[in-house]
Image (tube, rainbow, N blue to C red):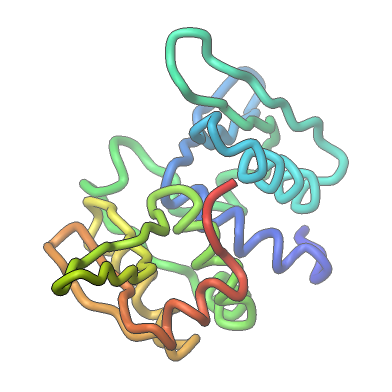
Length: 194
């Protein structure tokens, strides 16, 4: 069902789904995948739309802005979503078990950058920490990932390990990447949100 050419896009889309995605059922066994993103980052919205289109090239992808919030929903309808994203289930993600199936792990292990990029694009950020020492101000770029699901944290950290990226747990819901070599690795394929 999923072409091997679509594996990188799938890994990225899985990261987006785990962060800011949801699946709802509709008539005749059709499901809607919706990834809700910040409309201030049209580049990420475009990446999400492109990834959905690469995963299901025969299905139409919609991009819908919300007038009362700063959000954009990227959507696609298909009967395939529960098979492609079997983490789907009732209730919120942090109250149910989220694990990757062996076939998903094979894809994400081959494309860990894409999964990490999707997770950062949905529930993470890159920022610059500033510290003044005497008359000098030092700037340190960092990445932060925040999600209330311990299972999603585990998936994120496992894939950082695959990339050799060092991280710390700033709190039970926040992972930070602050060491310069690790930030450089993430900058090579993520960078500031656009």
